[in-house]
Length: 310
Length: 249
Image (tube, rainbow over all chains, first blue to last red):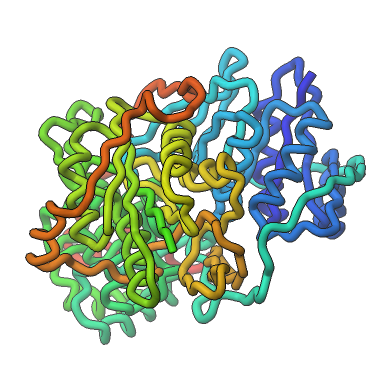
């Protein structure tokens, strides 16, 4: 019977996908095969979790080359009788998903939040209409490509020595890599934070950020923002944007400051465990989607809160 | 050079209302996705820096004949539209777009937004690149054309790659690539006179358009929140204490 392939270039995401894949295995499936590409370090990391690993060896292939990556994975899938390929829905994974699905004749979904097996069908949920709705969808085609959002599944926690094999694959080169560099500036990962303070347009003065930083420090929270605060006001880098075109976060605590609660923002925060909304505007939509609401003048609330938490 | 910008007609997301958890599309006008507009702006900037013919290519319902004027006003030289009523999966859109591209003067560059405004599956550009057998780069935040190649910056979550891709190629762009300009009255008036061709789906060389995805439901999520009004900062601090958010981590 066919097996489930799992591939992400990032080991943490690969291990999240391993959990998803094991949930999706039917009785007849021959299990989960973790794919790595030209990456011995990752082979060892995955095998140490007791997983079955297949390393694709394609000497000329660069990970930046989506067309080549798609060919390598498609060839591996065909040689190793595979019916489902799980990818991470990070940028690289999403770009690869469409190409691989087209080449392999597969139906494909991306940005998946949940994945379940129901009567031999793989059923997924994902955001639609810019986050206004959540669609429940299934892939009907024989071949399936599913890209799952980071942090949707717990990291696989296995033990024992997994098996490792190597598959030689030839993949063409279609692009030339001139430079790879870390993204300049902000490296804060708001998705990894347990507590977030989100700054919205209701915070009127940039000078207020100082007191907001104090509050964040006292609560051991990271500071994030709504889109316009980064793109229009440039108070923060775009890496701190919460929302559909920013980051989807699931912190234990999210405190929103002067955020109205448009759908595009809410999608990035609605899975938080506790939401506290502080807003000048008592009619803000977010006040109807929060656990605790303080409708009061931010200019007064912020310094008072900082003092109280000191 | 020939540049094709693939744009998706979507309902104006700001105007969709939710009733009984279901999205209501009645009387919601159509527009283009914001990032599609960035892709078009990128093409117009390439044209301004050198010489190019910019074609806006769209697949969608008959309302497109009207919606397309937005793209023509924003700088496209001509428009090609493929009319297809009803919802379409990414695989179907990709087939129609690729087939329409094959009928045109061979493009050097096919641009997409990184994802459509409504579905955001980010599949269509990649699928079109595969069908046409072209190299691709996604999530591009900078494009420079140089002797038959494009030097592009792909912006990933924590790193950037500077890549050289030989044209023709498919490139999908991010929103921070540029700032979309607002068309002048003159441009809007001229838009009506620019060439606009309707391509009939039957005339395209495509396989039967099948369906590989089944949508069981599409509903607004239910939010279960406590909705407790807090009267003062003092009360708020009490809440934070109760919920265990103060003190240790």
